[in-house]
Each structure stands twice: as C-alpha cells, then as structure tokens.
Length: 296
Image (cartoon, rainbow, N blue to C red; front, top):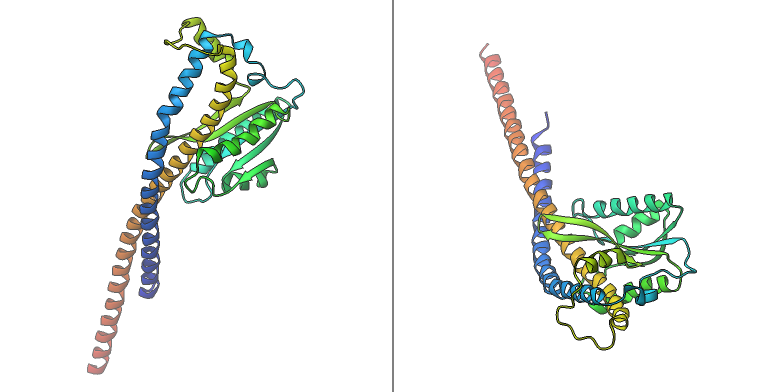
C-alpha cells in the first residue's frame, strides 16, 4: 500500500494539473467567443457570394469560363493539398481527424498514379508531413492562432492557385474542420481546382434563373472574376471555420480533463484516508502491544 507521503504527493500533482486544465478551458472559451463571432459574421457573405456565382452560371455559358474551370494542358500529375491544422495540441482528436482525412486523400491519389504535395497551415500538419515524408511546398505557423485577415488568407491561397494556373498542379484540395457547434466539428475535404462544373450543370438543368440580376459585362466575363474571388472567399472561410473548431475542441478537451482530475482526486482522497487509517491502526497496535509487554 502507498504511504501517506506518496498519496499526498499525487494529490498535489493532480490538483496542479487541474489548475492548468481549468485555466486552459477558460482561455479556450474566451477565444472561442471571438473566433465564432468572426466566423458567423462572414458566413452570410460567403453563402451569398456562392449563390451569386451559382445564379450567374445558371444564366450563362459554363464553357466560356476557360482556364478558371480547367487545369492547364501542361499540368503535371501533381495533386496539391492545402492542409489546415492547429499549432498546438491538447485539443482532443481535432488534428488527428484532419490528418486522417489527408492520409486517405494521399492514399487514394497515389493509387491513381498521382504525386501529392502539401501547403501546411499549422505546425501539427507540418509535423505529420515531415514524419511521413510528404513533399511540403510551403508551411505557415501561428497564422490561425491570432486575428488573421482576408488578406493573409488570400496570400496563402494565392500561391496555391497560381501554382495551378502555372501548370504545377493538376488538382488543388482544401482540408479543414467545419464548425457545427461547440461539441461537434466535422473534418472536410473540398476540391478547389479545377472547379467541378457538374454541380452547376445539374443546377442549370433544373432551373434557369437569374434572380433578377442585370449583368454588365456578360455572364462569361463576370464568371472569370467571380470564380477567382470565390476561391479566396472559400479559403478564408475555411480558416475561420478551422480556428473556431480548434478552440471549441480545446475547450471540450480541457473540460473533460478537468472532470477527469476530479474523479482522480476523489479516488486518491479515498486512498489517502485508507492509508491514514491503516497508519493509525498500526500505531495503536504498537501502543497496545507495548503496554501489554510492560504489564506482562
């Protein structure tokens, strides 16, 4: 049985751990409020922008968009993935879920005979790529930790998009975590380029509407600009979603850790009381035994 000193040392250690998890939980709650406010403020804009693109496509000729929709004829058999993860751990299975999605994508594309490269936003994704020996074109640290802007997202996304138009990549994919609620986030994998026209074509067959838009210049010319800006909008939204999901996951993980320390403390206190009782009983036995020896 553990001594009183050992049990007390464990209790002190768990109590210190509890203080840390409680503090991290409070920080995550505070960051989550700010990140969620920014994300929810941008969602209507992103949704409306996507709706405008859809309306313009349904009213025009998809084939007139040209290179925006299709990969370069000279493009290499390279698939590029923009992988969003966190820079720090202690957020449950948040990073593991994203990495699993990336690993599945790599396996699938290699079976198709294609090479895969990465742009990593976050240290955890970069560490995984280095460990697995994947090619990293660019990596960014501490971007999603702070109050990043649309400009920063556009700069990161712009390098990837330009690589597609330059013929370096045949496909560009985006992996991030979509925020649903504080206790639920969904890892997502979306194809950014080439833009999948099948969705628009199906929509166009169902309804040929323009929602009252008067377009100047033509729909074909507008699409080239709208689709390119739409890619930057999609990347910025993914960054916002990922940052919010990370804080939510860390908040939940630290709350669970705090609850776990409470359970551990309860069991340790019981063990401490048992050890204390055993020590007192042992001392009483010694005292009684000594008294009987003197009396005898």
